[in-house]
Image (cartoon, rainbow, N blue to C red; front, side, top):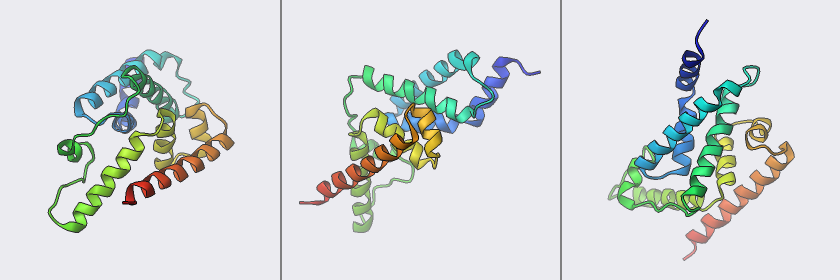
Length: 172
């Protein structure tokens, strides 16, 4: 039988994308993302003895990772991170600065979207991340600790708020 350390290392490796996605959602600077990812991994290890193998590891991992990220954000002063324009392409793969007007417009819309997401509450960011990951409302409810109907209501309100905030940015 595998030792708890080996089992944990295997599960963490299989699901490391969760840690990276959460760190990218809550931190914009590479150093902050690395620090948060390490903090999440350490907390996952501390909590691992309490993991119930009858439940999905990814749900348990998301819950721990999001709680750590939200605490990290609160401890950082609950301020929205500032994203320097010259680092934007490092933060979000596929983002490039181009002299072409179509690319420039796309880049501006991407920056606007990230700015709107950064202004959302930590819980709303968690909801958005899980929804974008195609998690079921039941799994989102389990991770966040709210009812499925509350997930549905909060997601609808969040999507509407993001549409409105993006529309405000488009208006001269």
